[in-house]
Amino acid sequence: MSPTTPGTDLDALVEDVESRNPGEPEFHQAVRDVLRPLGPVLEAHPEYARARILERLVEPERQIIFRVPWVDDDGDVHVQRAMRVGFNSALGPYKGGTRFHPAVTLGTIKFLGFEQVFKNALTGLAIGGGKGGADFDPKGRSDDEVMRFCQSLMTELYRHIGPDQDVPAGDAGVAAREIGFLFGQYKRITGTYGAGALTGKGTGWGGAEVRTEATGYGLVYFVREMLSARYEDLEGRTVVVSGAGNVSIFAIEQAQRLGANVIGCSDSSGAIHDPAGIDLELLKTVKLDERGSLADYAERRGGDVALKEDATPWDIPCEIALPCATQNELDAKDAKKLVKHGVKVVAEGANMPCTDDAIAVFQGADEVAYAPGKASNAGGVAVSAFEMEQNASRHGWSFEQSDERLQATMKQIHETCRRTAAEHDHEGDYVAGANIAGFLRVADAMLAQGVV
Ligand code: GLU
Image (tube, rainbow, N blue to C red; front, side, top):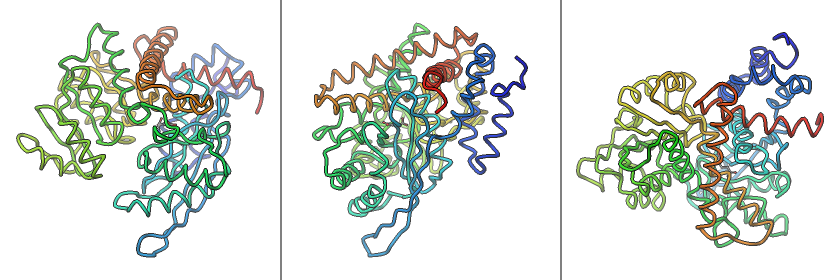
């Protein structure tokens, strides 16, 4: 097949995506990352090109954008923009988180939604891909302000979601508090207890055990598999994590349980180096209970702990690096530092935290195993799918049962990535394995369902 056969010229497709979606560099980056290893797959399967699977995959099925007005505690009116992108429903209802952050744009939500399609496919579960968010900054806002904002947002969103249609959950800036307010308003407007319309609910009222911990725990379970493929384990390993939110905190917790020494993390105030090992209880108190900053942690921890203001943690030497903060937080310069200091495993807890150049540095270093977030951070959405299953059956699972299924899911994703990579001449390449395996599952479902 010539490279100009419709549907197989990947460079032309990327150019088309760029010109049809101007000003959305993160979305372009996410598309390039997925398409990069697909050339030979498309050559071997002309049926995908014929059905224009790729052209359909890069175009969201639907995009909803709406105004969210709300009143702050002083009586001042604010106007936010919210959106929900239903990217692909070949495998199940749209499924993905909701992000509240002042920098959120449609481009952000599209990149996240696109990633989510392949991540969700890798879990092997019946979930399509979607994402939502708003340019609302929850930082410094009172509970009442957050509640009013969530209620206003849901007053429009409710008509677009549902257990078989689209199931939002948390992401950066959206956790148990926000999901509670969103669910309350959904219930009130619809007049039904539609538990399956949102995941990440409280465990006392329809939420799944382990959902809060799932992304961080799942990330470390994935790292355990990566190490085990090299006949190694986590015992005694030095780990550095970026971020200090939900994903980071539970990654630290599980890494410590498996015997690792986690010596660094970060937030918007800077990065801390805690050579004796992070005091997890103190970190949880400061970050989760008090919604404080790492400056408070450093002050209360005392001793050798230093806070480097406005810095990333990537100059702290470590064997395992877990970027869990945000997109493009780790660049080639950071990657070179990590490699120089002897990093062995890099696994993403955030979505797309490593730049393309950083990934190239890791992939060029013989000793380094690098896992993309769509594989290594899929534990969060997997447990969300377990929550949907429990809501549909009205039967709750124990913490142990959920955690066991999470471990089995991360093991299976790891195996899928490695097997698929090997089958396509990319032995040991988790990026190729994840993207090809995710693509094949979605593409085959799309083929079977016809041109829709
Ligand atoms: N926001 C998380 C992610 O990026 C979880 C999504 C969900 O639970 O639906 O995968």
